[in-house]
Image (cartoon, rainbow, N blue to C red; front, top):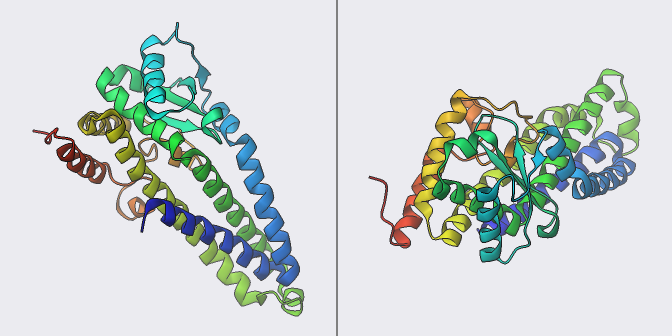
Length: 290
């Protein structure tokens, strides 16, 4: 199954979860309310998600005079990909990372941390920025915002269901065609877990695709692979205080965790990403890392 088809199916599954939650809460009326709720949440993510994330990380827009190398690389990649020049931001953090946001290529923004500018050479930085431009070209910035918003809506509905069970609202729900107390209990447990797993599956799928697009755009898979190794190593030691709701935006996961927690990561393991990039490097005639 292609990444595009897989993402479409997963987004449809998130929407279906919202509708199920609405029906469990209030029968046919709850289903209608949940549908409107999903539309409103999607509209909100469409219009305001980029502004919110830029503000959250106190990112500052920089011009070509202040960051000439950064602007030159972004402009070159935008030209190669046939995209408008995005706004360029710098995040005041020494943890090396980067993200892209914006509902469309015309309104996109690319942000890098101060740490990544210090850590990477120009070749590696080009690979990272090509990855972020690939997210913009593939419309991942909008897809990830919608997925995060839908998952957040499901969490909210699950919390409402929990309170409904506590205060005995299930009797009326059963008469109105809702799921009753068992349906509500199942929803409070199953829906949030399913929403989280689906959102993470979407994120991991888009990361692999962005890596591949970036490698072929700049014809340099090993530059991005080298950058991922460096960023991952330093990000373990220099933490970025990131919100779990926006962790999926970054090129490497700013939230650390091993064992069972790694199963719920928004990003594929860096080792697997590097392996895939090495295979692409062979296709491009670059060879592998020594």
